[in-house]
Image (cartoon, rainbow, N blue to C red; front, top):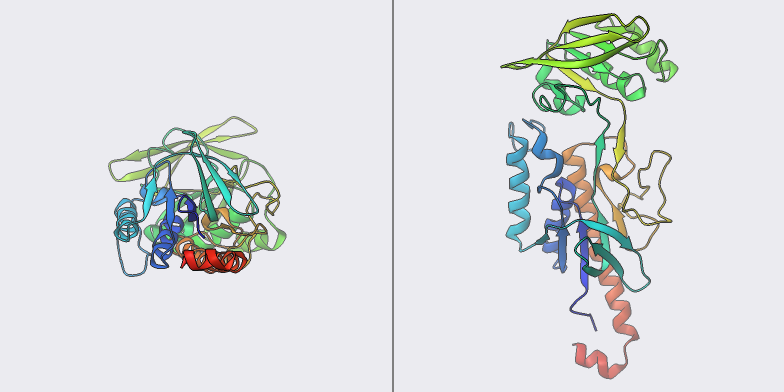
Length: 326
C-alpha cells in the first residue's frame, strides 16, 4: 500500500530540464514536487534572446522561462521555493532534506541543479551578460555574424568555440594569458590555420566596455610587460571552464574527473531511482533543447521505475492488504 506522504518523484532544480521533467511526470500521473530556490527557468532568465528554441524564431530568455513554468503548473505541478541541503539515498525511499528542516521522502529523484561557467569577475562582465557577453558560441554566435568578437581562454573549449565563431564572425581575437596553449595539438593547428583568428598571447581582459548598444570594446593588459591597450569588439565570449552544481550529488554516485554525473542514455545514475539531467550530466553539448530532452527522458524512465517498485511492493503484501489497497 503506497504511503500518501511519500512522493513518487522529487525534481531538484527548475531550469528547462527540471520543468520539462515536471510536465512529463504530471502527464504520467506521478505525485511530483519540483524544488527550486531561485527563479523558475534557471539560466534562461539571463539570456536576452533565444533564437534556437524550436517553434519560436525569437523569444526573450525570461519569456521562455515563464512559458516553461506556466506549462508545468498547468498540469498542477507542485512547486516548493526552498533550498535543498542534502539527498539521502535509501533502500525503500530516498530522503530530500530542505533548509527549513523539512524532510521529504520519494521513490525517485531527478537532480537538475545545472552548473555555472567560470567568470573573469571583471568590470562590465556581469552588467553586459546577454548584451554582448556570452559563455556559449552555439547559443549566441548567430548574433555576431560579420562582426568582431573577442574569445577568452586557452583550452579545448576556447579553441573549438573560436573555430565555430569563425564560420560567422568576420574577425576573432583569441586572448590567452599564457604564451602556450592548453588545447590539443590538432585544435591548435586548426586555430592557427584559420585566417579569421588572431591570437593575443600573454594577455588578459581587465574590463569590458559598452555603449548604449551593448559591448563595444575591451581593455587588455600584457601579463609579462604590464602594457595596457584597448581593443574594439562587438562581443566577448568567455571560455575558462564550467563547474557543475554537484554539491548535492550523493556520495558513491559516479562522476567524471570534471565533476559531471555519469549516467546511461536514460539519465539514470548508478544509484537506483536517482537521475541526473541537464548541465549536471556528463554529455557533449549544453543547450536548452538538450536539457529539456534530458528532462523528458528522465521523467518517463522514472515513471517506469516507480511503477515497477509499486508493483513489486503490491506483490509482497498479504492477500488481505492487497484487497484493501485495491
